[in-house]
Every structure is written in structure tokens, then in C-alpha cells.
Length: 464
Image: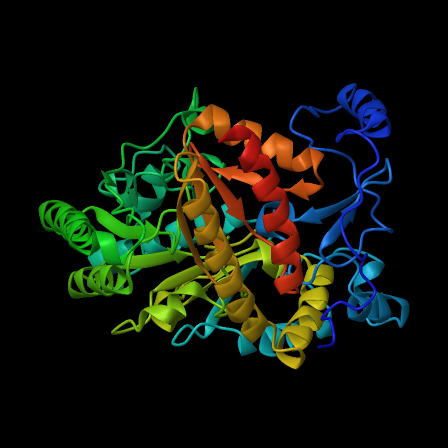
């Protein structure tokens, strides 16, 4: 079988500690100006290929983390490099425009072309921004605008409304709320943090809205052994949502991730999401599906929510990460009546949009979604085998596509395992308190799975 990335390295090669001496020297320089404590190592950008990061010390590292799920085609995909060298992106390289003021003509082609081609069913309208946090912020604002417009029966705001707005004293508006779920992560900007519920350090010392939070059902695995528990947990969660919506007309939206990424790779069933869609639709409450981390193919469908067979589409779907720029798709009825309501200077990044055109072409040409489905089955099967070999250390192998995870017996051991894997040339990352998550590129194949599992096995033998 022809490799999806034929010129990538043959495999892992480690010659120094990771991070190595050159990485640590760079960290010292970097830290003099910017906080560098979170840096794993420093990458040699030009030498990295496919699924492998090459660091500045010459180590070749298999990347399961993908810059926190941001790398769709691996490193330096030839189609992207050819497009760059061939001048396809020249129109976007000379300056960065304010896309809401004087966009290049090429931007219209991207919006009506690639971005519209991958639009979720039933959501033909689009807002582009730069990051996932901005996408969530503006999706929430869109839900607030929808509720306020309904309350005014479509009328324009009064002079009094406008005057009170400038004093931060809008009656009813200041009491609007968004429901989110325990363990959720929706961004680090000030508004999105009010919906984020994963790690306290993300929220500490920042003012937040007193918005309601609901238990996420967090399915237990294996699913067949925990079916009754999972059904009951999902029913309780839906009952909580229903009770909150029925008691409080100020709730404008419910926001949820298809799989909780930062919260511990926690799953719920399609039936749960179908129920959530029915509950919100019946009450005309905006349902925001936050696909910043799951979007663009990592679960084997372009959007994770496509697999739920919803009775009707979500109202809003946010994106970023593998999409290269941020934004959200939404229903036509959520389009603001007035311009400037949802706006910022850049409104995205045309260069990243141009790169996304190429990325989508490669995904379609090379059937990368099919590859993710096939490779994901191998990955989850091999993770399940690891659990069987080390039941006292590992548990709950799970995944949709290659968006996968495994639990380690406690947080300290999980952290030791991540570090030990790094020393063996596997870049991975934690999720929640004790999970290790997989966020590889869409060109991740079976041989990479086996290479990774061999290293996991070696570390597990020591830690078990």
C-alpha cells in the first residue's frame, strides 16, 4: 500500500534526552522575553515531515499530540509546499487585510468554495475569526442576539436600550445565561471561560458569569459492560438540562463538545445528543456544538456531530484547530439584523483560509476520512489490548476515529508515563486528570499505531 506521506522518516530516532541541550538553550533565550515553561521542546520546522517532529537536537519523534489537535496533514505536506512555492498563496502574503472592510477577491472564492463545501448540513452561514476562543465568544453573542431579538419581537432597540447599554445596565440582557457541562473546555477568553469547567487554574482570579452547569454523562467503557449505567447517567443529565430550561427563560444557549477534550476525553452516546437537540429545539434555545477540537476529520467524519443522526442540525457549530482559522457555522435565522454586531478587525486569516483550501483538496483526494476510520479501529483495538495486558495500570481504551484516549491509574503515574514516552520518542499529552489522548494527523496509519503501541508497552512494563 502506498504511504499517505511517502517522504516522511522511516521511524522514531532518539539520540539525546528530550528536551535536549539545544532545546534547553533555546528555552533560556525564549524565557528571557516570554513564558516558556510549557514548551515540550523546540522543533526544527523545515526537517519535520508527516507524522514525525524533528527537534533542534536531531531527535525524530512520532507525534500523537498534533499541537493539541491542530495538524491535519502532518508536517510539510508536499501539496502545501508546492502550493506555496508555486505562488498559490502570493495574494495573501503581502499584507493582512481587515476582511470585513476590503477583502481580497480571492477571499470570496474561499468562503463560497472550500469553507462552504465542508459546511455542516443545515448551516449555510459562516463567521470567521482567528481562534477557537473567539469562535465560542461570538457564537454565544449570536445566541444572545437571537434571544434579545425575539423578546423585542424583531423591533429595533429603543434609545433607552442604547443608553443603558453604555452603562452596562441592560435590563434582562445582563441576566442571560448559557448552560455548559462539568469538564467542559470552551476557551480561555473572558466570556468563554464562564462556560469552561475543566481546570480551576484556567479560571482562577478571573471574574465569571454565574451561569448554570450540568453533569456530563461521561460514558464508562467498555460500553457493552456499562450500558445500563451510561443510559441512567445520560437520562439524569438530560433531566437537569430540561429542569433548568423550564425554570429560567434567561437561558439563551446550551454549549457542548462532542467529546470533552480537556476534560478527560469523555464521551456520550448519539442518543444523548439527539435528546439534547430535541429539548433545546422545543424550547427555542440555541444549541452550540463546539467542534474546535473534534472538527475537520479526526473522528472519521468531517464533523463529529454528523455521526449522531440528529433530528435537526445544531444551531451553531464552532471550529478552529485543524481548520487553521477559527469561526462558526450557523442557521440563517441567527444572522444579525444589523451589521457590526459580530465583527472584529481581521475576521480570520486569508493565508490560513488559502491553506485550508489545499488541505480539504488533499482530504478528499486521498480519502483521509476513510483512513482515519480504518486507522482508528486499529488504534482502539491495540489500546484495548494494552488494557488487557496491564489492567492494574491502564483502563478505558476508547476513541472515535483516531480521536482516542486511554486512562492511567492515577494522575502522577499518567504524568510519568507521558514523560517516559517522550524519552522514547513519542509526543503525547494529557487529558483531564489521568487520561492520555491521541490527536494525530489525518495521515496517521497503521504502522504508526504499532510503533506507538510498542513504546507504550515498553513504558507500561516498567510502571505496572
